[in-house]
Image 1 (spheres, one colour):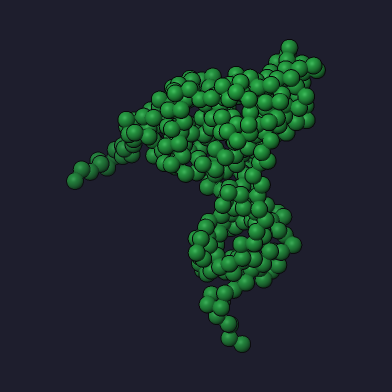
Image 2 (cartoon, rainbow, N blue to C red; image 1 turned 90 degrees about the vertical axis):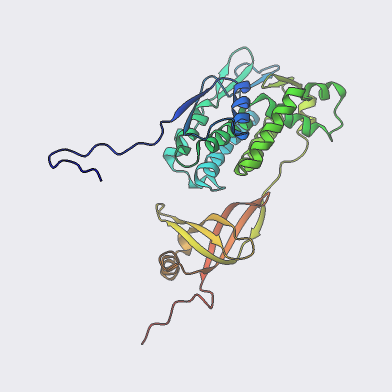
Length: 352
């Protein structure tokens, strides 16, 4: 066994393999790299992704009065885009369906600035910075190929032309749109192959499915934002006002209010907020679902606080009364309104 001389400082700890930088400059490069990661052509090695001038979301509204103009409907669509980005970050980095888990610093780091050009209402949003921030947050939390699949999947659903064309084509199928509209949104053979690659990514990284659905809601709101504009161009796809309105006529999915009362194990308590405690819970019933719930200050009685601490420290299960909303099978919000001991989990009575 080798020894270090008495007066000699020990050498540096051995380092793991250096990270390889992968630069993505276009949709074509993104899909080729994603294909390689999915088919194991890309060696499983630590990677970091760099994005140059892609993905960029472009929207153009053409019509009277649309000169560097943002209407309330356009503003709502942009707000929904930010919400989708926040939720995606929460899902992929913190494994939570609700963006309430994000810190102020995290929200600021992924906040976008939309650029509005003159002559019409041309709005551009560079999503490359967002994908870059997500990459940094995920390094070390998953394998190299998992990171490539996850970040590229997010970038594609958020800003790829084919993601928008596929959405428009799917939503046009049952809307009885005219032939001209069908031709406008029809996928080419190459785009069809690319969407199959993307579908494979959703299968390998299931968290991307909810992310994709969030950005589909953004696409829906963008179509609705056409307002009285004569034409909307989204990622270069040109739609007349009536075409956009017809495709957007299907209502968005809305969360359902439910009660998720049952026996749970408390995984973690977060007391960082003054007016509530955030609680990571794991269901012990048939669903065995894990999600983050909150408990408001007015329910944080001394008795409930002691129960929560005992649940975390002593790993005791508790019966929780939870008001929640669920969208597509995923818990989107959850508020705990009561904490009780199940009969078999109550702490022993203290001697008199």
